Length: 178
Image (cartoon, rainbow, N blue to C red):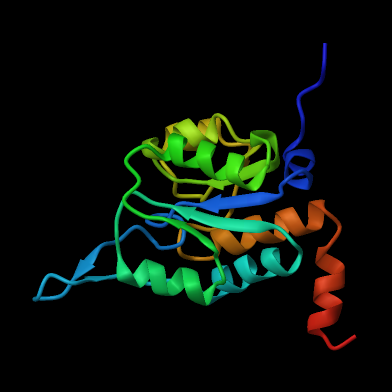
């Protein structure tokens, strides 16, 4: 019998980290202008964490059920090369993305907060959730952030991956000018 992997062991294998948007990169609130345009609020700490994953050679992606020009702009700013919006079947998108990059599902991480994220979370190697994710998602996650979605949860998971892969300290030293 093989012992179950710890969250840190799972995080150490991540070569591709995928994020949902609403409730993960944002607080899940949906604001609309009088003209019907959607507005979203993103956390700068989260964005820097995603950029650090890229600097460490970890591919990043977004798979979201909604479509938004704001999300496209934010993904570009965070240097996320793989953006999938309007995804009705997140699992199919996940499978196609992992295959196109030549990355096995066990080397992929996914952070989600609600039921539509579960099919991917149940098939990837490292399933993460923000603190305020739906209880059924938290129950199935390998790792749960202390922070809520849109309030630092993404940065926490990025730091966790970087620490597990022993890349965090070098990136911190570089940021300090060492």
